[in-house]
Figure 1 (cartoon, one colour):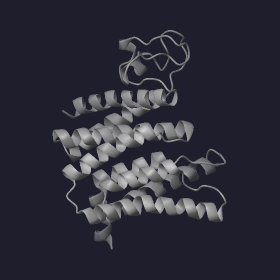
Figure 2 (cartoon, rainbow, N blue to C red):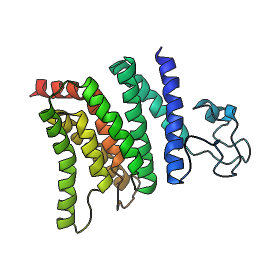
Figure 3 (cartoon, rainbow, N blue to C red):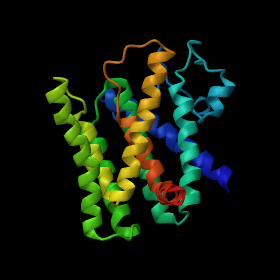
Length: 250
């Protein structure tokens, strides 16, 4: 069963790629055949199978023989893994669909932020809809706990923006990141919001140090949406286990 779930997730990952890429190009992501970005020729259905086609074509376009971006198979693989993780977490139909919807939108947001350092409002609206539905249907916490989660997650990022402007004379946190924090805070009480924030910042720190030490890159702006997405997904699925493990240690 989990193999089928992985295949389904890879297909959804293919859509997440289309959603992110066509949004940045102001193209319709529902209708229209996929084209090679190098030669602009339409891609046949048998060359558009998630992961499989990339392997069979050895990472090159059948028409022009140019390299296919690694973004396509990586995103399909990530979404395939997420599909299995979400299924193990909650295999009931409706919560699973909502989790997949959130995962898809978070991937699309992460991709557009990496490419353009910008988060599109349409993606945030979709994420908000999925988050509200999942919160009120399947998360058993009170309204005050939710308000604390929203205030802590989004409010902390908002404070960082003001602090960065005062101390460093530049924006330390983008408006899109802050909106994302307020939206995802709907899913958490204050404890899970702390877990999500911690995982977001620790993962960003690890990547930042890696780029600085091993890639010798001077980092001016490190897109933060991918790390918010990473921390939030882990907190939704494993947050309570992380809190329990932490409390058992202390």
